[in-house]
Length: 322
Image 1 (cartoon, rainbow, N blue to C red):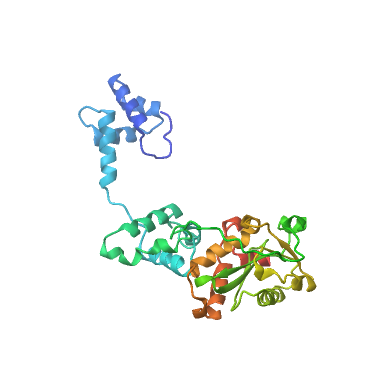
Image 2: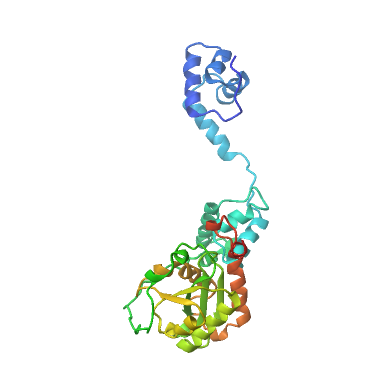
């Protein structure tokens, strides 16, 4: 007899062959040999799904019914739920990051697809026991949905002495070194000033500072403070916001500045992406007058400790060091 293979459930096709071979009068031993199964496997199949006259369709139906009704161990326990909720609400991690990090401590941690399904199930659940989880979807990056823009405003004036992004060095374009930044500002309620954000193009490490004004001298001074903390900054890529009109002060400090083309936010996609994450902590209608600088620093820390798939789930902090 052919040696039996590693145990696996019989397939529907194998059950059809069993039925045909039985009708041909073959013994259990010869049937097992034909299917490369053990005799005991064939014998158990006939006892479970026969026993008088074996039929493949009936056997498949009975097997499926048993599997649906048998007790299954659930790995999705309260400890796992608490971990997911904490990462969503406090760290604003995506389900993918949560799943990857969860498996570092538990090999049976659920997949990111499973987490997404659970979050949306909770949104529409009417059970009282699920009440605490109904708004979890709002902590997803696009959980609140995107609003369409109304009339496009173009109040961007001419910025003297600007260099377009085409002139940015190739080494900066290819992200081959640290010290090449992208920067932008984040506004709050009523388009009032909120934050200035800078990100290193190579490591994606982010620096955030609260701002009280969006005037050009003030914003550039804040950017210079960030650059002095980072050290050895070579270039900064900006957009055409009037807040960056005094970019020549960066040039005087030995930092080359380059500007994206109007309405081409994709040309500084790294900082735009980080602003999307920052908005998870500070939504568009945030009143930054009520936000303490200590809270901004905490958000900066969380973002820089956030694992990134592009770095094989190293964080920007770890990538910046390496």
